[in-house]
Image 1 (cartoon, rainbow, N blue to C red):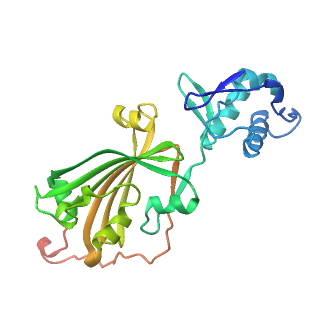
Image 2 (spheres, rainbow, N blue to C red; image 1 turned 180 degrees about the vertical axis):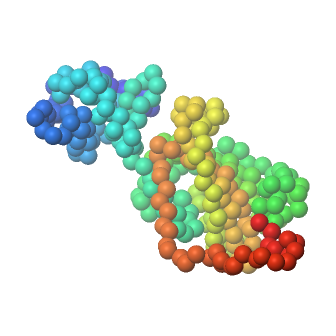
Amino acid sequence: MVMTDMAGSSTRFDRSQAIPLRVLDSASPLPLHAQLEHALREQLQQGQWKAGDLFPSERELMQRAGVSRATVRQALSALMHAGLLQRIHGRGTFVAAPRIEQPLHAAYSFAEQIRQLGKSLIDRLIQSQVLPADPILAQSLGLPAGEPVIHIQRLRLLEGVPFTIDNFFVAQRLCPDLLKRSIDGSLYQLLAEGYDLPVLRCVDTLEPIVADRAAALYLQVAPGAPLMHVERIGYTRGDLPLHMAHNYIRGDMCRFRIRLPFEPAAIELRPLETTGSSNDRPAR
């Protein structure tokens, strides 16, 4: 049997070498679909298939496990929900790559985190240009509307797989020759070492969205696939707004973990005023 991976290449797969599923117990209080899910999960964890491999079809799993199609579908659905499998319309079900977990409790450089994980990150420049700041961008960066800003748009590939589209904006006057430099790798490192502009804190806004046709083409997902839009404003010394970013991350390859320390409520409760003019009361 010839099996095709997510990239479209083909490898020879011998059905006789398939690891048989453990015997499912119809007398067990655990439903058959849950038993099948656990058995398949074990085989995935043992490395029978690698990320990007085509997973066995529903019919093959029915034959190997001796169960109905409905049981197989429930098991596969659970594995897809867990992020272990990915279904691509018209092509089949594939083994998903492990998701990158991004903690959100401190400012971070994604390139540096990937380096620490020992994984490869490749940047492909989509466009770089100088353009006038629109009113929203100007307000975010504390600039006059129309001031020149540098826009760098990159496609970032994690282990060779398109992972995120990054849009980076910074005032041109802060780093006038930035576009003459190599802009592969960490832009944070470049700003800190080349211009003495370290990023000291960030404010991130996360919003789940779906991929439009352009994003789907770059990220190699179907139009309508889930993405995470991360809007970031980075600040440098003196709490000066340094840059703004709009990043679009594949939802099947990343998840975010937020650390929330307990803090006393900052809301001050006051007795309701029953006298005086309404103009003397705080605006709501």
